[in-house]
Length: 256
Image (tube, rainbow, N blue to C red):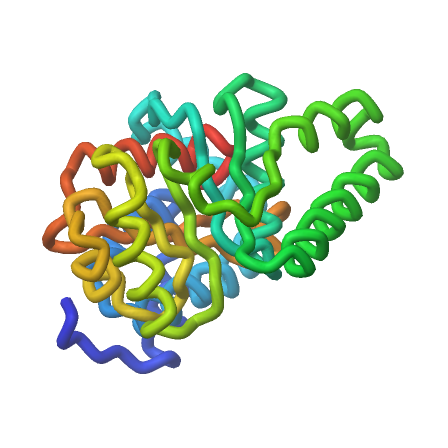
């Protein structure tokens, strides 16, 4: 719970010991939302460290079992990504890849307020995709299709009709609250907001948006293109259907 305080050592010891059961990662991932932000981050890191000490087959089995419990449809046609830095560009690339390969989304709106940051984010995505092409993971046609799914813009109006928006700006609560306050007025009522924060209060940001029922946390791990685990966080205000749709989306883009 929010008042729960757990030492880093005790978390790692517990996770390492309990991962002897292939179902334990499922339990841990499902219950992460019960802890405060700092402890969630510690537990998530402990899971990654402990998983490295288990057999690949156990981990693969657990991930398959967990994925089978997810809802099957997110219904997000248009997805927005705010911030194309270290995490944001990877989230945009991952969503665009799913969109290109399975027609999951009609478009990914990649937004930065500054043109230079937008160009840098676009170059990061292109560079990452080019590396995958050079390794034979994608064809040139695949690369073009992925980039073609992303609309790069400095005009926030493009986000107004998005179904789902992931925010990945710097970890500054005042900036995030201001952003969500503005987005709450600019976006259609059904838009779901998701913060990629690793340490800040999801509830505080949700309340600032004036639509806390449509607010979740989606904490990706770096590098996003490789790491499978995504921490999905709900608050006391989150609509259960919103949480389920977010969980479904995470599965649809190849994460757990």
